[in-house]
Amino acid sequence: MKTATLFTYFKIVNFIGTLPENINQIHVDSRDVKPNSMFICTRGFTVDSHDFYQEAIDNGATVIVAEKPLDIDLDKTALVIVKDTYKAMAHIANKFYKNPSSQLNVIGVTGTNGKTTVTTLIHSMLQKAGQAAALSGTIGLEMHGEKYTSENTTCDILTNQKFLNKTLAENVPNMVMEVSSHGLCQGRLWGIDFDIVVFTNLSQDHLDYHDSIEEYGYVKGLLFAQLGQDLNMDKYVVLNQDDPWFETYSYWSPFEVISYGIHSDADFSAKNIRYQEDSTLYTLLSPEGEYEVQTQLLGEFNVYNSLAAIASLFAKGLHVAQLVEYLVDIGPINGRMEKVELDVPVTLYIDYAHTSDAIEKSIDAVLPFKKRKLIFLVGTGGDRDSFKRPDMAEKASVADYVILTINDPRTENPEKILADMEKGMLHDNYRAIANRSEAIAHALDISEPGDIIVFAGKGQEDYQIIGNKKLPYSDFETVCENAIKKYKN
Ligand SMILES: CC(=O)N[C@H]1[C@@H](OP(=O)(O)OP(=O)(O)OC[C@H]2O[C@@H](n3ccc(=O)[nH]c3=O)[C@H](O)[C@@H]2O)O[C@H](CO)[C@@H](O)[C@@H]1O[C@H](C)C(=O)N[C@@H](C)C(=O)N[C@H](CCC(=O)O)C(=O)O
Ligand SMILES: Nc1ncnc2c1ncn2[C@@H]1O[C@H](COP(=O)(O)OP(=O)(O)OP(=O)(O)O)[C@@H](O)[C@H]1O
Image 1 (cartoon, rainbow, N blue to C red):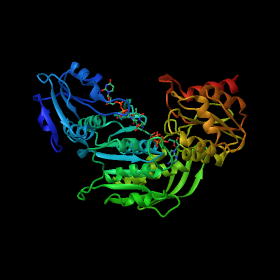
Image 2: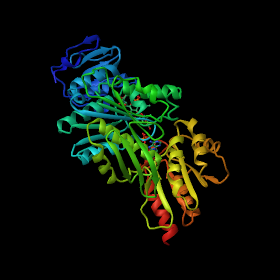
Image 3: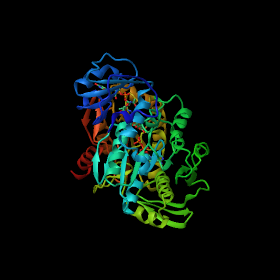
Image 4: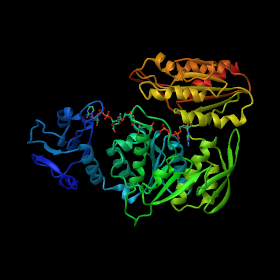
């Protein structure tokens, strides 16, 4: 790629040295730089990578993009000074990777809860419709059945553009992306031309990062504004009409809104919902008529998620009758209200609920078929959003017996995390156990045949972060081991 062509549509403060004719790669981490690369310095939350330019040069960088003059040998490396390296990176990456999103059908899903579920449903349905699709989100990146790990739910600018470029190069026409508020706030989505944007819901989360729930809501709304203003494009906004942010988001974009909901007169709505232990049934009212829907996903929240997925693909031109058929065969989403298939006399679910709203919804999902006790194990993470802890415990108090534990302690004192949660408990029928494996063992130990146990907080994750170490850990394995110990010996 001709280096000079990458610096258009933003102002250069100063060019120093001679630009190489071409560069092979672009990097933001000095440790990853390869010969003849561009290294873009950024002011991060923890470090300022303007401090690592020398390492980048030692690794072969021939162009450094920075916000200030740096003391470098200009014979070998050019220095390009810009006002804002994040914005410059969005422009440079977009050009370097050939603006891939403009040639793809990109669907972005945002909201506090349900992003992974909705993106996975859309991805699965597209594939069933014979349309190849790539996926990016909390579970990682996926294309043609191959999975790649990612650091974040919403990747950084370079990773996004690179993956979109690969999607296009491999003739995959669709990209389904989870869009987090951190991603929007940090501009990780800048340069992505979305076609359909979807909103699940908004409730309290991430208030360690956002100043208020209002700011959090406005940041999420950036996704709708990001559809742009070119009305020659076939673009849609898919919104949950039952959510208080519906009205606000509906005027953030000029593109047509397709609504869904249960308690409102939405374009896609669910009536006559029947909750069962292994499936959920409802009548779907849609612009293409009435359909009986059956899904293996449990609970009212998954009725919303399935409506969001169906409405999004209707926006893309697929027929509702077909979408309803595809849905029947889609199994539970990894670690999201997923039943543990074991021949034991208790019913066990692994869930990823880690906000108070998700905990409420998770409990609501199992109450309709509760025969004996409901034991709810709830965890929260260390070093993150301590405000939500009492609320989470309060919502969990609806269960007959609650076990308070920790998802990832990180560097925070475990006793402090548990004490924060205990403040919200509404009854005394609970135990606080910091060690997650011991907490799970206790849940099974006190269980009796006929009980339901929900293990919330870790979902499918295969690690636990203790201190600064990421250690192998699995709720599935721990639950199975203890269930077998209790009921099979
Ligand atoms: C607080 C936060 O959001 N941090 C994000 C931010 O990292 P940062 O600014 O702290 O990076 P940094 O460590 O200061 O490094 C700055 C730069 O120096 C570079 N560097 C660093 C060291 C070195 O030796 N050489 C070098 O060049 C780094 O590669 C980086 O480019 O930018 C990085 C790249 O985009 C993100 O990976 C990182 O997410 C961290 C890991 C994170 O945990 N973020 C969470 C809060 C988050 O974003 N979560 C949402 C999901 C939320 C949800 O819905 O649950 C998400 O989208 O993942
Ligand atoms: N539509 C919804 N409304 C409320 N709660 C939901 C909804 N969908 C899922 N949940 C709850 O949230 C948990 C996480 O679901 P999911 O992974 O789909 O959300 P997410 O937005 O991707 O979360 P994260 O980005 O933190 O991974 C589920 O296990 C369930 O308890």
